[in-house]
Length: 113
Length: 114
Image 1 (cartoon, chains in turn cyan, red):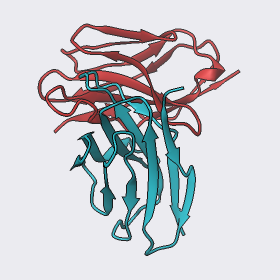
Image 2 (cartoon, rainbow over the protein chains, first blue to last red):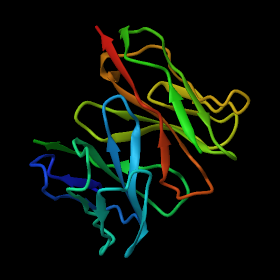
Image 3 (tube, chains in turn blue, cyan):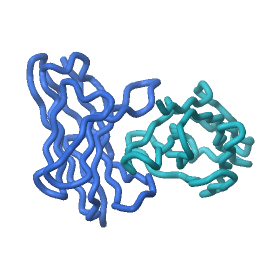
Image 4 (cartoon, each protein chain N blue to C red):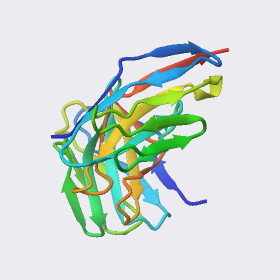
């Protein structure tokens, strides 16, 4: 079945550590996105990539980094510079058609101890 | 900039009750509008969408109509089920920007009791 796979599902981090969240898709979609979800708030865009080897900052990119070396993969690194990293992180993708329809992974919950 | 405002939650209903979740938006131009649903422990999935004024999106008994004059996209269902318990997000896509760069509302938690 085609879809988006995020891992790990749960992750615990000590302060000062960098962590990388994995996102893989087999939908052959060009564009991929990382959103952050906090309780009582909508999703906020961290980074997005419309093509391999290219990506753009979203609304809350500070303290995060990404890479897009392959079409299928879009990993997100949460660095120690992110002041409040505890959140639910969602990866999504969409095709090259201007539909705005996103396909989401099941998310990764990061907790900083 | 773009923004989406949803009614405050949580919303608690009995099975077979009528559901309305209000959504209003602010955007330049003519955005596409969406409702996404998030079941417990899962990512979001598209529920319905409308791409131009007066369009009605519908799916699984849910409906929403794109009202340009009131900048609204309220979600309705005539008879809810326990399985509809989830978080519902209203969102918009500015057609002039990246096609997956959505602006989301804060989400409305719906709980349906038997």
